[in-house]
Image 1 (cartoon, helix red, strand yellow):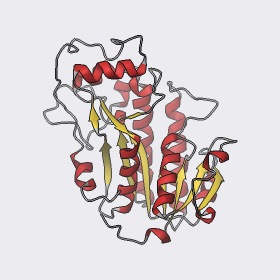
Image 2 (image 1 turned 180 degrees about the horizontal axis):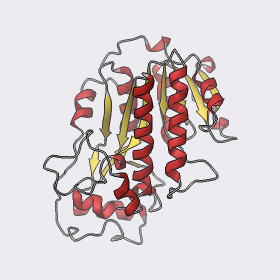
Image 3 (image 1 turned 120 degrees about the vertical axis):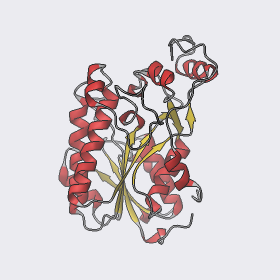
Image 4 (image 1 turned 45 degrees about the vertical axis):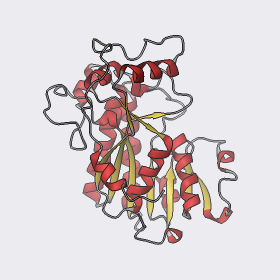
Length: 299
């Protein structure tokens, strides 16, 4: 896909650029010719970004606290777009019943700041498939789950699915503000990001056996996730939510391989369910909307 604008004239902000997704996004955007405002939440991580830009004038580093409105606006000034992904604060690294309040406040501040920056044309908001799949009626829905579906916050709270609850509430907050303030926003509802250091402690994995049984246990690799973010930003026709995954765990072999990756000594620890012995579980989640958009994307 040929962008409908001149990339070299665009300055975008990546927040939080200290996370794996944010860092990779900043790196790829620089390679494509963008000027990047890399916003870091954590102190002492500026060195991570040293050397990722061949032109030092193309990269500016900012210290932004998602709970400090003014630090957000400082990073956004002069930008035409924002790529936002939440990173848990250092003093609260684990997803629990309180994380939703933290993530919602951060989303509120970021979208409010975007509304005040006149140059911002589009916000790409990273959410999760866990904001889609957790519903009381998920086993009886006739059609595949897709972007029109939302996780049920009360269901998440009942079963302590804190990741799903936080992602659902923060994304709903972002959408409410975007619509109220007239901010052009697109959200990416990503599957489980497959990384070399993935472990059973990852909050996405709570309820993994149920996702496996339901045919909605989706994963995504880093390159595809980065490409998706850039595609929805550059394509003027992008709108709404996009489920983003390029693999589904729905065979016994898939499940065993993932379990061995997470912990080699526990090959049956994830997922375990009544359907585990089945060779194949029907996929019940769709990313057709994204696939259609990505057909002509020039990575």
